[in-house]
Image 1 (tube, rainbow, N blue to C red):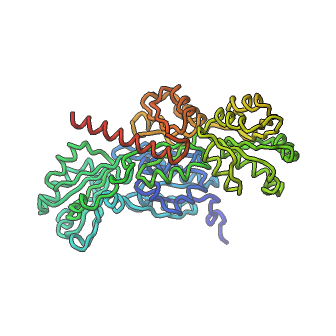
Image 2: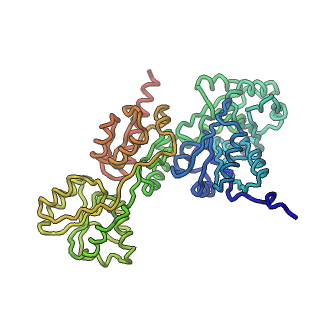
Image 3: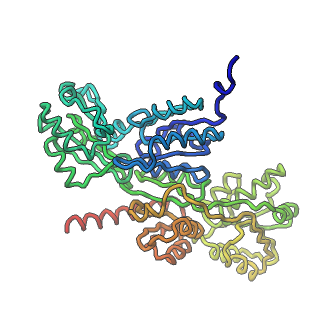
Length: 518
């Protein structure tokens, strides 16, 4: 007879996921899907801020913080966390930098899960020995220079076991890539030289590859330690030894992108953030997707429903946000109504983004102000001979206070109906810590509510050190209240805002050049 306890499998499951080397674009499609469905994420510092920011804030996040020479949580404790969470029926992601089976101790964690009869799955990741050199113009193999690749850990196991066989590596005549080797760099260089490698062999040390803080030192093996010290190289960094390093100056591409080296924190609501983030990434920026506000439909939509029942009485509908458009048409869809119910109406929108959202429903706005602000919208609409006309404004609970009085003064009858509210969100990444360490170059704001949400998420920060890219005058006024250094886009559009970020980058580069000259 079989003991059921011996074959029982936990209702939970653990996914061992490789996060890649830092750039969220290198997170695999499967990895992103698994993260989206997880209940718990157990991660360390190599998972990358950009990847963690994209995860969202609706997960239980457990930081186990393993760095060279310092383990915030021991491997045994990490194993215990994985087991305990899975045994509670949770879907757990163990998120590791790079690939979980390349010096990531993934095998040890799976052995522990197997022992406790917990289901698991491995999602491989893009590994740093390949990706980081690629982002620095170094092909680790090349027909003219190297036909083999050797990946070595520079971090010895406790007790000193596992000495590196330098002579065998030199005789292999391939490209050598050392991981976790910054602190052991003098020993690595000495070992290779003693084993017979030529002192003038091209060599590189690549810090924080694929991120905004990417730094590259190309030199020779003999000078590598001195140049690394001069450049103040710190972990994480990849060491590459081999003739392929000589190709870097010719094949490098990352720093040639317009926003290379720029870390941008994006505060837009979750449903609007993706396209803006992708436009910035295509220009080379590292983007921390950090929605600080949510637009939440009100549970009680009785006022909107009443307005829809008498929609034939209105002359204008005014939309002041993309969220307003979306929620209004969701309510129409529930009734199985389409735009034929609205053919008698005219439409006014506050800006191009709201106009585009409306156009997706087959309707093009009749009116849009040049300045994308509630007061400007009200003034423009008041010039349309609206005396005695009925206007419907489905918008946020706390909308612009100037809009309705302007329209009523012009003789219109206004139904100002709240259909959603704005809520502040917690951040999945330590925003305050990143700002303190000067790892964020620019914060992008698309509304006053995003400014307030950001302030709530980063309370206690010295805001005078923050460069704010703002989509309009009203948003900039909100940011200035906190003492931020504000830049305002020429137009209230996402494309204009991205051009503004490019201008900020150019100014920062000029200031950096002046400092170096001094």
